[in-house]
Length: 358
Image (cartoon, one colour):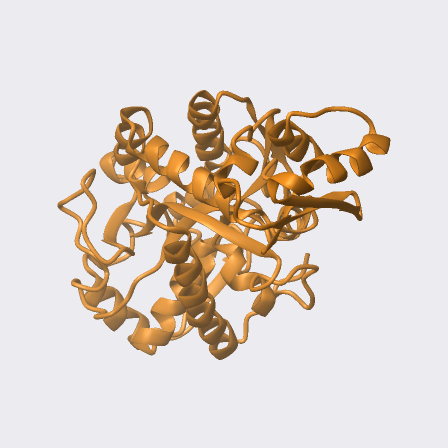
């Protein structure tokens, strides 16, 4: 059995230290203990004979701060969520977890940075909805979601809320469908850009209801909200926390949440599925991943520690109050989620003829 470990971790495990010139001596010394080592491509390869416990190789990890790459700018939900996770995870691991924002190209710049990082457990990254859509939306992406990443844990899901201008003579999802069918291409909905959850939420709605509405992309959702309040656009689908204050103030009218079930912070609002479009569901989601090749022992440790963080009141209570559902689970669960979401949105994007340019 051969495993890859960083030089510092291996030296710590073997009880040694020193420059690269010491490695041959280490190799000779520890053959008797069942460990054979050689240096290749900057890594130490350890051929294991089963004499010593395998988990001890990574017992010293982490020995230094961990970088958490967030593929979006500061201030957005992925960044805010990640900084909260990073703070709690750092306490749990006993090392600082430093957020590194890498925005741009529909998260592709950040995803690529994770894919190309050393698989030593000292770089992880936030993986969200664009993981499932970029390969269909963009002409080319510099990474492969199947082979370049090791999923760690799905941390959160959050639905959107479909809302309209009160000037529109519609009070329910079924009435919206009927109105749109009577008035093809007359209703305009806004989003924060082609391929966003705000955009694809309405494209899925159109496909499932046979309606025709016009998409108007903006640089940010605040502009969209302003336009709908001013009745220059008619509707939108945005995250619950952005929309609810305007609904409560009477500036917007809520029709349905896009999740499979009602949300605790607004239980009176039906889901779109129960309000007239059976099977309809879209949520924004996020989790953490590591570069492919990250040792299984470190993946297991990160998964366990992030699951502990998700169960803590510091995360759970705050997120639920914002309409964000903490998830958790195994790396396999997150891998399956990304695979299912990729298949779903690849089909929607193809049928709707959507392309994004960055």
